[in-house]
Amino acid sequence: MPNIKSAIKRVKTNEARNAHNATVKSNMRSSVKKVEAAIVNNDGAVATENFALASSKLDKAAAKGLIHKNAAARKKSRLMKKMNSLNA
Image (cartoon, rainbow, N blue to C red; front, side, top):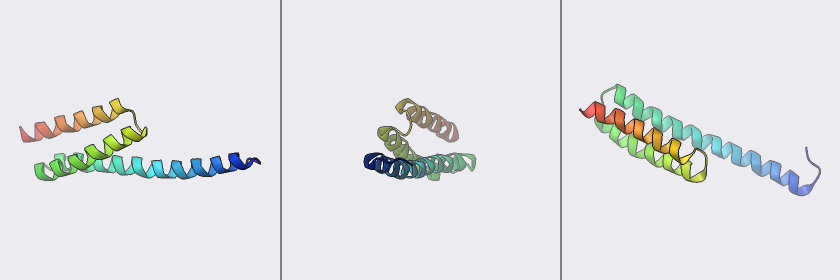
């Protein structure tokens, strides 16, 4: 544990941000899994609804720097590709 006041504060804020980032990433992954589950169940309406939410969460995570913007784009593209194969 650091002795300097600013370093002590930095440790606290790092732990708080780390916890927050972990929950945001977990919610993002869960929303992607919901879309994939709906695709497996051939439920296009639910998949479309969940895709909008998952897309938003991916974009927000990329904007905050939790994941790379290209990784978010890649995940969205792959989900959309799966959804298109479901409708075809």
